[in-house]
Length: 131
Figure 1 (spheres, rainbow, N blue to C red):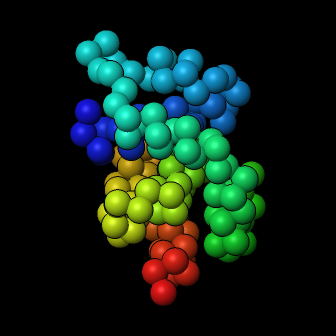
Figure 2 (figure 1 turned 180 degrees about the horizontal axis):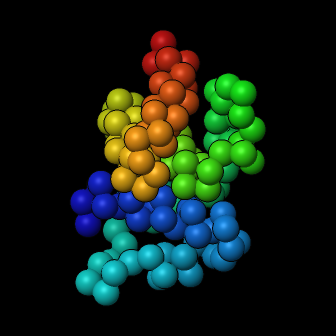
Figure 3 (figure 1 turned 90 degrees about the horizontal axis):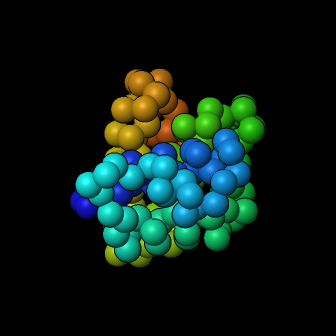
């Protein structure tokens, strides 16, 4: 499984968990296609995001302008959570790669407006952690 697909699956899993409160393992099983197997990156991303969810949500909230996290669409929230986890806790991935991948996933799921929204939030977070 390549990284882009793993990120996409991670967002789908986080979205399911957010909506239904099922376990990450159950969400993983619901998400994978028949010919797919979860690699370490996917498992690490999902488990890490859930493990650090309070901190991740706190960082996202700091960078939302005129929004609350609860008002953010479920897909965009899952994309932001996955990206912020990757930016803060996966040191081997360049920050800009995390941001760009998240924007592409947001556009794929939610369209151009989602891409712009995710870009705005993550760019603000990027400025804080890059400097």
